[in-house]
Length: 105
Image (tube, rainbow, N blue to C red; front, side, top):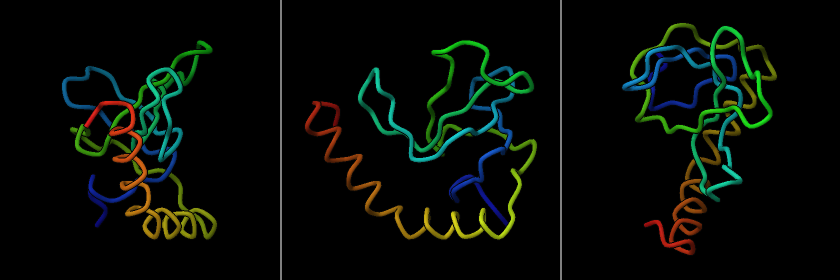
């Protein structure tokens, strides 16, 4: 069973804690260029998707309140899930180092 502690596939639809509408995961291990912060995910409003050039919601796994639909997983998606699992520790290390360098520990 997949939980919010696992990496969720692109296309997964969730509601965030305190949110009123669903968000579809559009990317993982995402960098917010404005804040210079790494996040677990970037999402777009569901069902319409991205409607403006700067639209997107950055969020971390612990911010997910509810699952609505798991994204599509084929062989390539499953292989990418393996890549994410293998790179979780380096991602977390890089995120911590980057936050420390930018005064956000």
